[in-house]
Image (cartoon, rainbow, N blue to C red; front, top):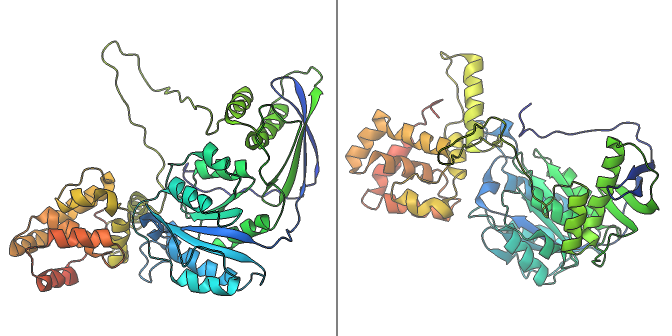
Length: 453
């Protein structure tokens, strides 16, 4: 199974009970896990929606390239929010914010009753720009909109100071949407603040949002005051489970046991949010936890000893199926299955637009407008270069008096120009000397090169 594949684990016939363990410092540890039940509190929450460029990707890889189109991550979130607004209580209060590389309120940014939420959802802007989760969280929390915050994102950002944000006292819940959304830092933030993380790997975002709302309606799990010593008792909520950990003094001496160690490690993870940073760091290191406070050491077993200059060996990391590289792999698998003589329709413009959406036009726009592909995904660069070499594109480029590579970039940018201001700027700059009607006629006739991706 590929390491970038989402895995759901379901446990049948679970019964509540008491689990016993022993910490690395020799203390007896117990865990009591029980169903949390439905919360009854009214909602008072700021909803922060990611609308960066990556949110235009399809929710599931199976949708990409279909002739009938697909639902993007952002479209799925908007549809679900409208549906949930009709199910909320009249006494609930919600504020709506959105962010890409900047963060701004939708409407006034203050809390409103549910009947006004649908109108605000209609005002959410289409995906564009980069992703600055940390800055967005910081802005909304400092605005003191509500005591709770619900973040909805595809998780493709890693710049946030978890410990500092956790110290603000705001409870953070997170919905990660899409097959490329497994992101660890916001998960740590949710756990430390008494919130929770729920994932949606397809178009059914509603289930993950409903689970978060259930937690938001509960008083349980709110952050505790930070201490310098490990607590004797911690209560937390994870999903629909209420968990209590206790440290009960010295444990009886026993042989090392993997299950006992796991109980102690899990309990330590619950306690991190109640400790100051240095104390949390010591506890995490003591119990062997890999967190945002500790280091992870990777050992390269395939390396060789060198007496010369140090060398760097790149390791290929998993690529989400909904990225441009993932679409390429899907195309290759389809090609292998049906054979080279089969005419396959991958949706034409849909595939081109999806490759275009995988590019951060805000970050790489200047280089692309100069005909430079440095910095973008290598497979996306190869896609552009392959199409720039096609005879019909080269002939059109000669007619327009433009370099073929620049024409290929402009063609890709034009596929999403209506949704991306930065892509439209790149297209205009590349085609300054080209008659709009000539380029429009070229786009109408030029088809993507099938499986040459």
